[in-house]
Every structure is written in C-alpha cells, then in structure tokens.
Length: 124
Image (tube, rainbow, N blue to C red; front, side, top):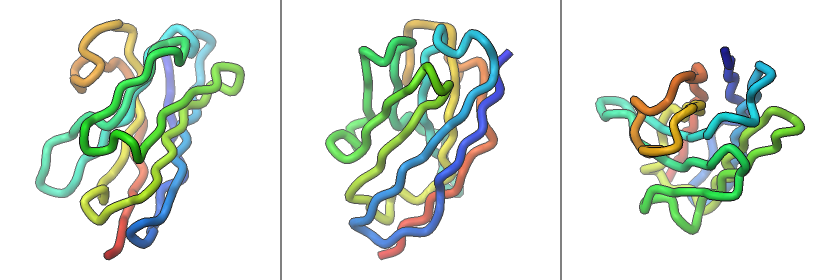
C-alpha cells in the first residue's frame, strides 16, 4: 500500500515556475514507477510526465516537454515536478500516481495509487 500526498501548487503568473512535490508512504516506494497527471475543469485527466522506478527513464507529454522536469528521490520517498515557463493552459489540478506496471506509463488506468491533487493556476 502506498499513500501519496502532493504539495507545492498555487497561483503563478505566466512565465513563472513552480515545483510540485509528492511524498509517499510505504516501504516499497522505490519499486514503483511514478507519474504526474493533470485535470482541468471539464476535461479528462491527462498524462504530464512519468519516471521509472530508478529514475533512469523519464517521459513527458509533448505539451510540457522542455518546460517540465520530473525527478525522484528514493531516499526521501518523494517525486518532484519542476514546472518552468508556465502557461495559462497549464492550469489544472495536478495528481501524482504510482504504478507497478512497467508499460503504458501514459495511461491513468496503469496506476495503482493516486494522491488527492494540488491546484495549479497560471494567470495571464
């Protein structure tokens, strides 16, 4: 069982930066792949970024590539999402999630555990 708690969301102007954190509980954190998703009002939850259990492989949605960076610290049981050059269209609730599956990292259904989400609002 893994419990995930996100933090770091807030209100930022376009062009600004935020760093989201997701703290996990559970002794097997290092064995899970991790991902970040987001959901804007009236839209489906969409993939943002993912990392393998070791952090050696990372994946990004085209819409955030070059602006966002996912990283993990297994010693701290924490995964991060550094978001730079934020745009109003990045406004959403951001969720971190953990998966045991090694494939289909971009599919929400591949993830076994979810955090409660943190709001990110980017003003123009």
